[in-house]
Image 1 (cartoon, rainbow, N blue to C red):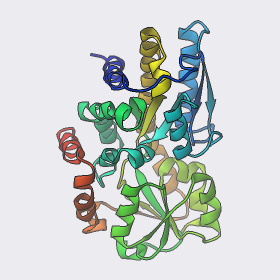
Image 2 (cartoon, one colour):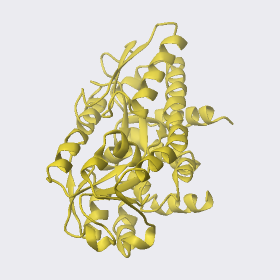
Image 3 (tube, rainbow, N blue to C red):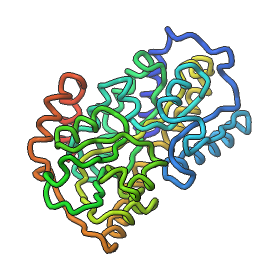
Image 4 (cartoon, rainbow, N blue to C red):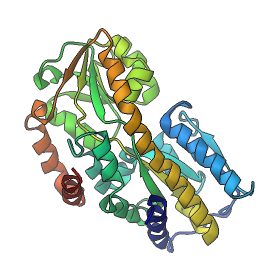
Length: 330
């Protein structure tokens, strides 16, 4: 069975959970809006625009999608609320934000769940991962169509870093969600939630001492310019999920549901291969800067990983299944 067909089947499972949702008055509208937080030239935004183009073509112009990147419709929490109310039709959101509403999705942020970017892709395409999407209609009020990818997480520091103890007490910028907050608390750092547009200036002026980020943005947004050390740790995945408002989905015909879910799944899934092909190049570019670059593995973080697992094993019931799946896919 093809990847797209498997995603379409997962979308059907999600749709089955929507029967109790109230239909929005404007559900089924042909002009859809899709929101993201990423800038226009980001991999996710490009995938969203390609989905919009394909949907217009496949529907002979009956459907259109206007893509709103760079937080034009608000931050991720606000966009998720808009999806729930039906005010927003679609979004490509970090699984991090979804985990704030559905804690089971924190399982994807288990430290060192993935060995590398290719392994991360296999995890996100696994039956275990896709099966988790069936929770979303009931728990969050959205349909999850497919998972996408981003680069693994790295650390950039304004000061010298030789061991994890050098991160203790540092104000370290994170994406605002609990799994990563708990990770850095266990490490002894001072995790500081901060939206993406504020990061460059905050690192430049010393408002934060370090940041947690993927290689793409460290390079593309030049965060390394105001750092002394780049810690290539690959310590955490950072997936994305393509979402459709449950209220909007309920008002669509079966034919439109199939067309939208298959095309969105295709382009969301494509981001996994894009990062798989590009991440190595970004890493090499960072190695070519005049910054100190160190490569570390799980041992660098000591007991932090075990402490994280102990905290989240009960909050995220799928954690053991995802770790087992990840081990089987090595």
